[in-house]
Length: 442
Image 1: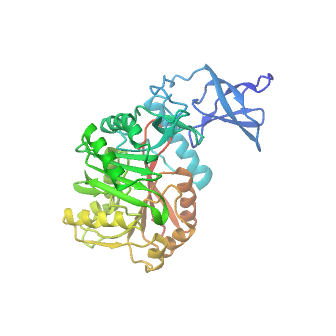
Image 2: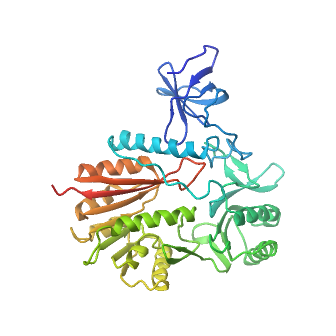
Image 3: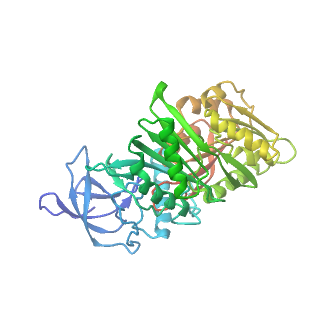
């Protein structure tokens, strides 16, 4: 429990631990206090916000006794920009903190108190690993525009001239776009997404504007192309029935993973840390095929996207049904199967809930799923339990929703056989987790 100073809202507290989201937990008497950019064991001076029901948010004033794991954050806008939460900790400390937070989250929400949580698999790079980024367009009082990220815990925007997490081609594009933004004022750009190929460093841009004409779109494309090499550009203007889209060049990038070539369009989701995604795909494939011998392994891949997991598994001889509601992503998956000469696949452009409702009990030996951050719907959980695959490989990017869903599967007769977490996004609190669930037949 932290010590307290009775001088207004000024407190001297001891940080007990970090919690999900990256904030430190301390106590001022019985009041729980949460504050950012601290580390366990540190004594810090804090200004308390107005207390809520049993807790308060704190603003860090000074680190009186720093942790041995504390370092100086290299980013000049760290603490303003909301993208990173852990730049003040060494890389080794980040991995240990995430492991502890994951273990505590699974125990607290999922009831999995005796689960073995091994060390995280680290990213090959701690900086310069992101191959995709989305920026808002900030305009100051004089109308000058700049690309920006959101401020931590706020809708306010922070102008960005360089992001240390981005691969070099994206930072070069960031600089070029910041220089060119004055030419976009008629269109009133609102948002920009930049994506780079890990293998070729080619860049694809997407722009979202309030309004535009075809002539303005072409003029903007020409200016961006003059400033540096770019593979493709697309501009979307307006909303709803009035929305229009213009594009030039090639909007799909090609990546190689697990021996497969993947073509990924601008309308499809792809992991931002492609190198560590390769390790994750190899992990999923290895676990999926373990014990696979003569009989065809019947696999259902839910939230299949472009076939990130299902196609490498099918390439090894399994029968894989890929389910994806995003038709553009599923079209990429079909094309990727053709490019890689993978024929043992079926493709279903339906919702996960509808696919499970139409599937027979025992129809699949293995289900592989990589849902969004919100996890599985209650209908999806119930459908999976009814279909009753022998094994489930669950890939999650959110420990709380993963823990919630695991609790439901364990209650229905599954057990967590093993788990492996991946540090997909160093400097942030995000974790990618692979879990194997096995149906208990006893």
